Length: 285
Length: 340
Image (cartoon, rainbow over all chains, first blue to last red):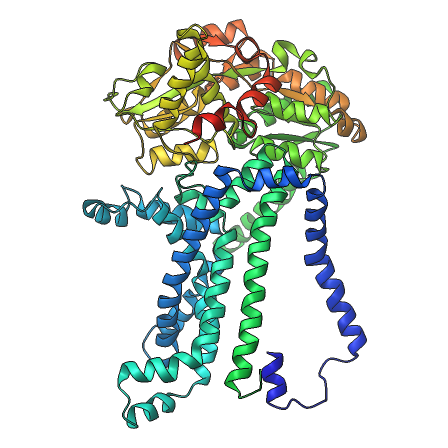
């Protein structure tokens, strides 16, 4: 955002008064809302020796939960990348009755308590549910399997992709793809060489956010996952289990793994996006 | 002469007056004292029934009004909330361990189990089975659960006290059957755990999975919960099976001395918990399918609670702290049994 603002030559006049004051308020807010809880997390961790810490986070059952969580989040994010892009495209480029309703529905996964989402999905996709009954003859089991985990994650995180791609797509005039077509590009070529590169940063960011969100998802997933050890246990459930055992340090240790993974991913996304935007605008990156 | 209009207006005025008067007469104003009861998840309906009766009983003997407030949740979570500062006067839990945690933290007296009769457990239950109508898989006891074609649903022992009772009941049964031969017990438990289809995090979640989703041949839960489900959905859909041998599930109560004292509620808190042992309260408890110790009430409800041998955690596992350490801690026997 900063890069874009400076590129468009923002004036030096500020809307908010007093750099000192606004920075102070920002730092205070960040400290209270983000840093304080994080500090207490690190405080809990300091009760563990490095060997204990390693033993907790590298336990076979824990590693299995990482794989389940990462796998589920990866599948969910890929599905969301494809369908999120399609949804954003439909919402921006076409006029149809009920468009506003569909637009509003996109935010529903944010608004809905995740436990409700999980219970609803489990109802739909269990052997007795509408969808479950249709899929059962095909030999596809969704509820209480790994597929259900990915489904729940996809449901709760799809707004990230749609809402990141949508504004960028709105900035891209329809004339651009028309021009590409007029210059003789085929549909696929125009999409691949003209539209996709433009949407790429937004799409990757949205998918990345969806992925990170899925890593930490708890409420929606536990109701549709069977929660069987080594098979359908997600990492947030392992944190919950540790808390039930009054093992705060252990819970913090696992939480720190999720947190570090998310942080690295978000940081990488930011760095990559910065480079990409600079390259797009012909800067010497 | 009264015209209909005047009559109607008069009626309206009378109604308003009556409403206002009623408003003053009914106890809308705050009670003199409030008592907070921190309880387990599925006890909402139970205490919603008991509390008004207690208030009547207490106010009949005292010259002040009281109100009992409730807080419900998974009982480990409830205990954590108290340790983090929730000022509850009494706890009514479904797990001894969660009261022990409070005792360790110095909020509850160390000898809390001696402060009220029956190990401070005014009512008790056991684990029982709910099977589909007609019991198609012929499940009568624990050894029927390890057959290859039986799917079991019960909550995760790692996250649910209810689930821990089920696990311990199965172990206690195996311990008795195989005369303490640990290799055989472990083999039995492996087969038992292998048949579990879904591990929900709590008792109500497991009920939903079994009842609403149609998963599994048998739901294992507290006898009280199993009976309540069967009554709610009609016994033409499910059968309740109480195994001949099972575990004694105590529902411990304690005064949170630290906070009750600070709230000036020590006496009230003791009276509240003592009330649970009165015949009146015991009858209410039995109505919710909990087993009680009062002889009169026991006789009245005799046909509802089949005779069964109830093993004690203290006798089989050497007490709760020992059972938690050996079986449920990270790397404990449960983890070993579930290891691939």
